[in-house]
Length: 329
Image (cartoon, rainbow, N blue to C red):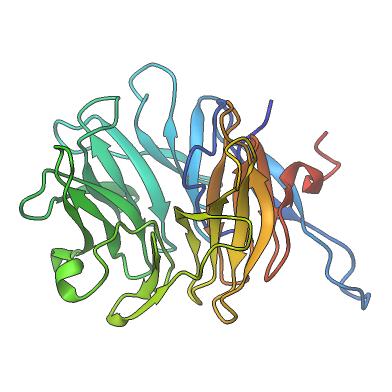
């Protein structure tokens, strides 16, 4: 049985999609590695697992080691988000009136959390929300929807406490627009400000936004950079992924055959070149999900229900299990 993990210090945040299919959350703390007096190449870190809760899912972690997630199972906390930090334990995140289910998606280094709240457990028709840390607790803010739409969802939050996401109609075919929210300006339509009319999939701390067909920097509508074509032998790049401040990305790309594993690729922002770093199962019960890509080029993911970390700027994914300290059998 795989144990879902987030990686402290080296990985800033989140496993975006289904990082956990079992009820154990583990945060990983860096243990002592090697001797600083020896002039040797740097070794991969080793990690010490820390159990947070036996019935919960880890979703995101910031660079200070604070984790957000959701409670699973049954009972009064089921479907609620939480914030966990070492020494303080888990703090339950409040939900807006009439929306008892909430899924956090991101946390920044200020402790602000972004996510989506729902009226029911099916997680449809929600509103994007932000949780603001206030005096040792959290205040929930319903971000609402753009005019002419009925539901919204958050994709991430940057270091300025700005949330990006998508606001859309419920009917088919849906029509929507990307939004930017701040505490001072409220909800604004990014498409009418000159940005691509495409759903954000991730945002870096300093405001680099990933969308289906490229990326851009907040504050600079003309900065949009389209994705290069898929590598030879591959044919469709996923709209979801992870991005850092430099514009480096990690994405999933479809294989030539529907029975072949999906490819996980890095995109170097400077060279615009793809490099394969792993594979994902498809058509199975294995859990898969891209995590984040930090400014060192380190990325986190869950591939075939295995926690994976790849060290930057060009390292391929390797099992986190292989890096756990032998002091933890």
